[in-house]
Length: 254
Length: 254
Image (cartoon, rainbow over all chains, first blue to last red; front, side):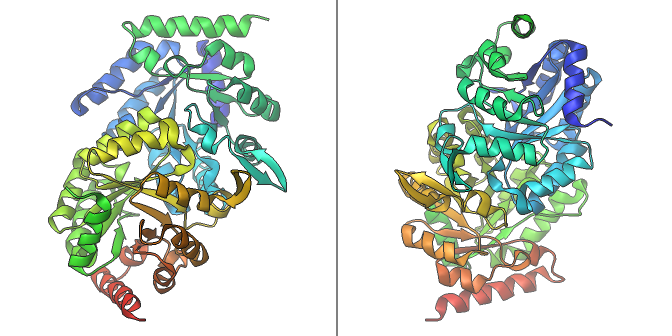
């Protein structure tokens, strides 16, 4: 099996879309969450190369329920990302990665603040034996990101913002992707300057959070993650199709 | 209702124990996880003032299953902590806290690296309307903690390790507790020097991870979190009783 980085690239190329759906339902009764998720995948799978699930579904549902959602996604050639922002000690990370990948996830998001030793190392080990991907948080899309990811730290005696330190960690740790919020295109450009084409940038935070797809892509993002603007739309399919067109025309323009 | 900080203090005082069980089963079939958790609570609830659950149970089980575990704990006067190390954007944190507290959790752990704005602020808001507690990660128990929590950052132009910045954040944000690993008693002492008796220190990492209960308590920890040394013991009740005695004699010695 190919590693995640290549699997999602193949899905994006063959399906003609770099849109990832953030499948985070709100205001829906727990008993209806699974059917809602399956219905949304049914409607949207032609327009997405990946789907990202977080606590909106992972907490209320059991992994048994979740595995039916990942199966449905795979049937349409959609890669599945568990957006858990893992940040625990080794023994817990190990169990979490095993559970998630056994439930059909292709990749997990990881907060690099936990460090390598007995932290990220166990995630890399458990994920790689399952051909699973690791996407490292490098600069999140919310305002508070500046208080952590944007903070200055001393790296080998030099003052550097954390997101630069994390981008270099992603290279050293052989990650499959990094997350940089679309709300900070200056940081996308800076991180792209470090990673180039080696490690793709995943960019959430467009639409409701204020980021622009066009600006994120032009700054170096490879995949765009969108949730609420699609899910809350009157016509989710129409909205997804519209976003794919924007992505297409941005990537095709000189 | 009292806030969490006072509820767990009352539980500790009335039950005569400052031991918190980290209920993280490994090597148990998913179909038997719930009954294992209930059985362990049945055996151990006399020796603990709190129980802490993380991905070992929260991922495989649904919140419906989990709420039976928190109910069982409450019947024995045991407070329930969701050790999710929350570190997401506001809208996701909000949903996670609501789900967890509706499922019976009294407190959540939070990674302060996400910052206040549209990060920790939503957790504080959602938790406080439910009288829920917030326990802030300040220095974790694993080796990699030095690469993040122990790293030097610039705070108002001064070079400070992150754990000191986080301890001051805990005061400013009115948190109910902080986590400092028992593996670093020097840091427990330093954090205790900042927080005093205002915010209790929760200390994991004793036993298998190498920390000592006696040293952690003497350095300023108020609650000791133990998982594997109890769960993996031939006789979990006997081991829990032994640890409570160690805590007692440490706190009673001059």
